Image (cartoon, rainbow, N blue to C red; front, side, top):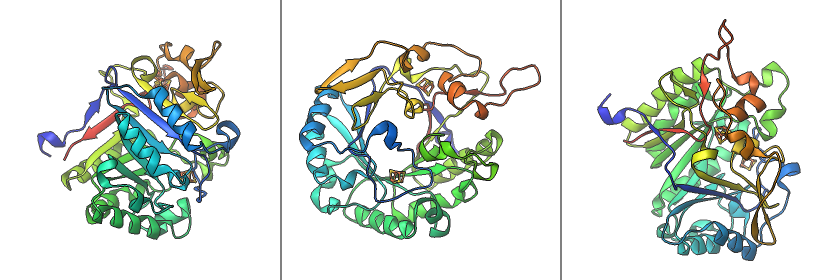
Length: 337
Ligand code: SF4
Ligand code: SF4
């Protein structure tokens, strides 16, 4: 392993802004672990006019903010290309997160220079692993469209959501990504949100044991970096010497849903805990006991929302102390090729 193959923790940068705009919640797929929760996020689609109004609320002239356009499936929005162009003119760095179906001839509607990244989601290195999770025929369609996008000169990235269903196959992804020409690899951890939060039987449990995660994920990340791919994966467990930091206190992250809810912590998305919302095209702060009140709490387990909402993910040692502190879910490790 060479020096630059060592994973570094990407600290939250002061002033960094990440805006995740869900243009709609509709999707052509029905993934088993889908995190979209229509009872909380609505079933609406933002009109183009409203989407642009909302983007203006979060744009900062002269300061680049990252914009991630997502859904549901964002390419189901007929004016996605127009929204991408408008966002670029507002100084956003723009990524579109697609399930790979690329509706409305998306590759023909935008130029590679107009998009910073086109991101695809795939949860397995072949159809036998991916399709039981994401749907029949999804692997073939998604990989075919990745090839087309790469051929046309788009910068592409891929998100793999690691769960107990596919962790054993993660090591096969770097070879696939190299063959497809994908430049960035985001390894995600399954969140207990949306459908995956509803599993009740032990055989339905999606989460990966801490030891298993630490044994597999960093090694595969290094393998991908050696293949020339820029890899990012969540920190999840803090080492003893590492300090805990909540992104809600130090960074600007906004997760915006078509019903106007604006969350700063993605773990809260299944609950009406959003402190901010958009009303009549204005960003409004709600007074009361919302997510922001929890960001300031310091607990031995690290992330307070994880402790409240997913207590089963924390292991304790004999003296009652947590075995690992859980980092902010937005704290990343990165390995550059
Ligand atoms: S592609 Fe995304 S939005 Fe669609 S079902 Fe799958 S996880 Fe849900
Ligand atoms: S995941 Fe935890 S640490 Fe991160 S913003 Fe939410 S509450 Fe804060």
